[in-house]
Image 1 (cartoon, one colour):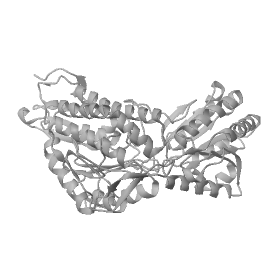
Image 2 (cartoon, one colour; image 1 turned 90 degrees about the vertical axis):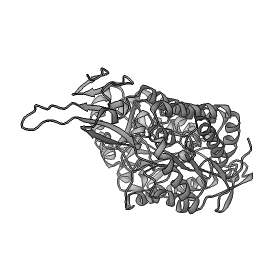
Image 3 (cartoon, helix red, strand yellow; image 1 turned 30 degrees about the horizontal axis):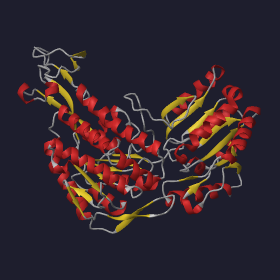
Image 4 (spheres, one colour; image 1 turned 180 degrees about the horizontal axis):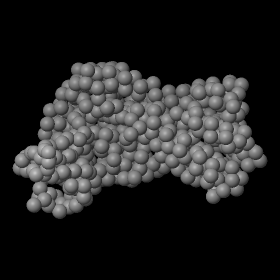
Length: 530
């Protein structure tokens, strides 16, 4: 497929009215033959207007119609898998296996939400029937369902060019909810973004949907992004990126005349607690598994382990010795962009210059001309760590800080000092359960997902999954961006009182035409109401 460099608004590929730019291969720094053009504020506003017009129709589509649309997107993506993989590997330096897997995950997310819509009970309908003879006042007939919010803006991520990008989880869940989507692409992979957008457009045409139900725009956050977030037609935002960029957009979203929800994933260091007995039994095994998790995706996963926390002693010394032995053999690897690589190098240089930190080891030397990063491991005494809040901040890349505690009490103090994170891992044997029991109540106030004897770098597609957490890992810790509950971010409850049955939505009608599970007078049932 030929890549045009254009933006997609209301079903038409248009030349962006803003500045042009080229994609870049992070390994060779070769520029793309195509020039991509950013949208301007007027085009961003046009996309928002078209999305609002489409919402009037799309929000009334049945679950089965929306499910068919999601499955059609998945089919269209599969049709152009070779083209997507070829382009994405060129733009990101991520290997074919990783890109194929991520494309499979993207398709899986679309199908997962289609299956949720097939089931039909995701709106969790509740019906409390009237009681005309109740004293002193009759009880009205009250029925509760969920309705879509309106047009949603999605900011694509740099580190997941497919699964958290144009057709990623935010887009899939918003479309499933009945919300049109406007995607602001990431400049690191514009060609990949256009290919994916073309698959969505093909699905829109095949399903004969309103053309404004999806748009894709290139552009900077200060122009296109800010225009979209503040557009009156936009009712919610999904964002994955940096704390600084996300917080600026969040402030715009909540500072509007009509504040809107901003679901931002901003940063997480994902602490790993190595409890004493587990570390004593498996220090070398933990070191090996940790290296694997740290170097996955060149440390560019949102759930990469950025802090290891353990109590001093022979077991910790064994761990540090094993890390010091393994790390120098680790080859440097290419990061997603030159800018990301430069930021990583600067962060590591700052840590190396801090008197309280000791460098444990580093990987093979990096080629600065190829946007390469080497593994960097540091250690710090917990007493010094607790005095320097900046040490908790995420270093995006293959770097980790080992926090060395004097005893279990200090380990708990480190846990109490933490801000919000997506994940925390505990390595604990049966003898560690008392300490783990003390640690869990602390972590549940700070963490979105707690794992035992593993790392958070695998985020399963599951209805039970939570991917989010307290600030700054997320701006909305009560929600998740992965799993079927992600659909709830883009809906709101709507209550019908004493409404004629003919005017109720299908899930609230007496006959229950789709035979879905409903809570009727506080009892779950699929039975029709006579």
